[in-house]
Length: 222
Image 1 (cartoon, one colour):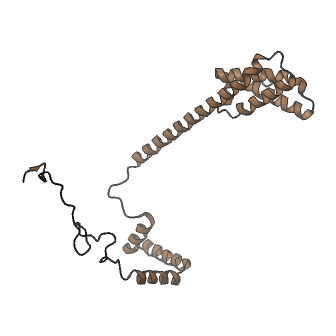
Image 2 (cartoon, rainbow, N blue to C red; image 1 turned 90 degrees about the horizontal axis):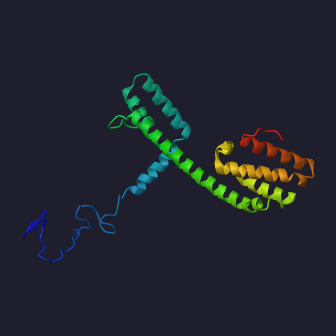
Image 3 (cartoon, rainbow, N blue to C red; image 1 turned 180 degrees about the horizontal axis):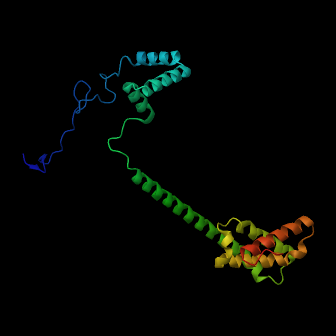
């Protein structure tokens, strides 16, 4: 029998599968699933009943009193009480001390990744909104001269509903696409002035005009 890399040759024959031991154990000595020999802990039910009895006998208030007593003993110098208290409060000491600088750096990197993810998501959302607004404005722009006041008002309100959802709308004047949309919305709002009939509509119109002008860096005057 020859061996290659420590593996015995099978001379072209498929090796027989390993057969579990006759007592229901596998090759590693552990009971296999579904065997009839390893029936589990015969005292499991009794242990569960005893644990339940302890839970029934000891109230949360009693546990609190015990914890306070252990804490007092620890403060008085009882090392066993100190050990017990600290193990339950903060756990066993780590095999290696935690590198707080590494933890801080990891948290910083995770925060930067999250901020980058959010910024990319916001940029993608803004671009979708810009594309939708450009589509909404295409026809009104082509027919701006023949557009009625009512049509201009409807188009301006539709665009404004999307425009105010854009992140960083305050920097409209520095973004070519947003600036074009803002100036077009401003033109539509000014053309829609005759369609305003009530004082409430007038107040809304003035507010929109002032807001768009401010975002465009044209001042807030009506």
